[in-house]
Length: 146
Image (cartoon, rainbow, N blue to C red):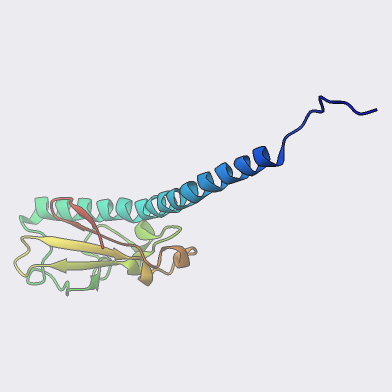
């Protein structure tokens, strides 16, 4: 004896659900990847803020930023190279970025500076995940993505 009112889903209903789930996954995965990259880059941005703070302290004490004519900071030199700023290698060591990432660029007069963090130079434990991330900060606190 056959029942006429059997419960369950039809094949069309199941296919519609699979299509909806696929569309949601196609939208959510790129959004998730972008959010994780921004989260990883936030470590670099925080360290850049620390370096900028040290530069502002130096400015308050000396009336100028660290410049290539003031101290031996060559363009592209490491921020921690001379020990002039109150920032050490351990201050800049994180999960994704390490002190070799942070390089210095300044005008010779010490009127302005730019600190860059390039993830390709990282020696941190998770460095491979940030090799394409580059952030920089200037004396005004403007953060740029390169």
